[in-house]
Image 1: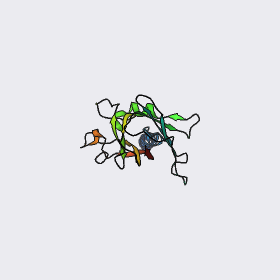
Image 2: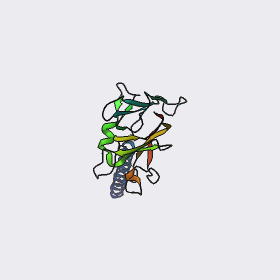
Image 3: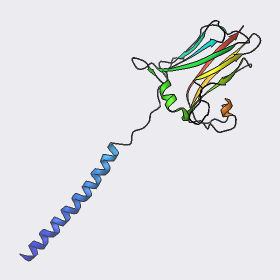
Length: 197
């Protein structure tokens, strides 16, 4: 009888230890099935730049739409009209995710995460210069709003607008709009053919 009791105690102890181990494994499995939420990058299908000439004139709208993302179709790029030489334009950007209905506007998220984003404006043939008009919480450029000043003479060239995620904003030249040392990842990039008359 004494041996049976000792045997029973050993079995109960063994079952208790097994249940603890099983509970610990179950807890680990729960963590695996419920990982920490990931802050996914927004899908940007459409970028629209609006240029309003200071002192009056024709507003110019430039847009790129890529509704299939990495699919086989190239983005549709449009520029509503030529720019006027030796003119200052107030510029602004609107970014959309048109895979949703209604389309989701991405500007608000970019403003909320302004310390982690910066737009860059690069041109060929020195067709224009740019000045940032909005800034992040640390006083570094953001670029949803900007001033564009066209060259003094008629010419053609390309304007490239690039949004970088997590650029090194304190790197050499970055606060002046030079993308060379910015690093980070490109969220969206658009190339517009520009005619200045």
